[in-house]
Length: 418
Image (cartoon, rainbow, N blue to C red; front, side, top):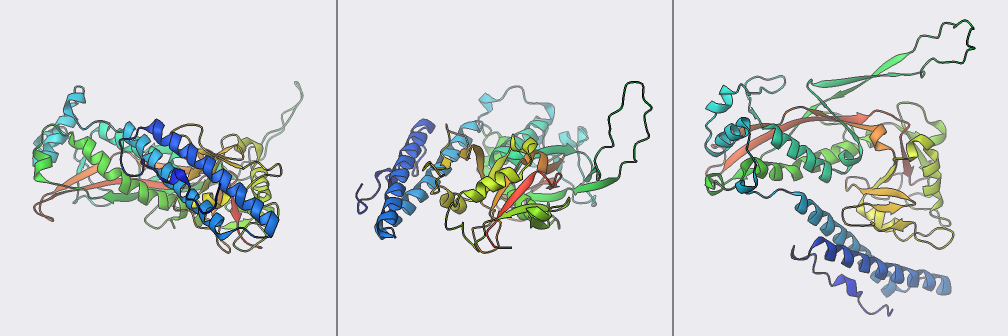
């Protein structure tokens, strides 16, 4: 390939419209990945021959890498769009009484039927500002979409509670067990030392607006509309909190816990391995740090482990090869699936930090065992036709908490020397 010629796969139609189906978009993504491999191989060969890559070749590799990221996002959007229900009442099947009453409240503010159903819900700690619980169908739809859009939620454990705080006990010194003969006396075991993890739920809100025309259109399913409106806002806010939240009026992210070198790891902190270079991979055998991190995790956790990093970090890792010359990053096997890194799925979380001196931009672990998301049952909606006339605002809230529940299940890579 000539370095002066633009890469053909960059001429992508999937970026400009939804007329291409998912299969075409994925085929285009794979073609772009092949062009990326050829261009990066050419860059590496130039570096070996001349102790430096041609500027045009480097620019082309970076351009194709950006195109891969854009096309992957387009595939994810098409996948999510196909999963969304049609906002058409002809598709609905026998809406529940709660759903019908909620629809009347959304359209006209008539809450008589909701009050008759005794579904009025007061906010935690304040009984005046109220709101109405959405129907179970709508709450389930919001939860399903959040699982698809929120990267950490998609791989973490999720537990629903009815109280404001989930308290989880754990044994600090492990279970007291031992071996005995069949007829031997059973010695008394040591008393287990228990501690308690607490996961308070915090209020997360969104405020979509509707026009009078939308509310008057009887064919539009309004509770499906509100699910679609709040999904992006909820996913963006909770995604950032699950990664780096400080635990003040929001969940505590796994990067906010004390971080220590893996050789000094103790319960209550997150262990990391070091690249040995400030803000970069090692000059030689760059992928060795990834191998070290995989095996820093105990075997029982590796079975369901995922890599977590942002788009820029993934672009840097995409160029790395193993000792046999094979790329360690592999594209998804099909639409809607994850890319693979050294045989483990890779989850893209834009809230992870970029590669820099002293940062921890890469996480690896079994997040299902390591991180717990706590959802308080009930999503509440308060209709506000006054604050933004002529629009009607729908103040939608849900309570979410989160934090690390197993500190041995998540490891980090730190780009530094100590």
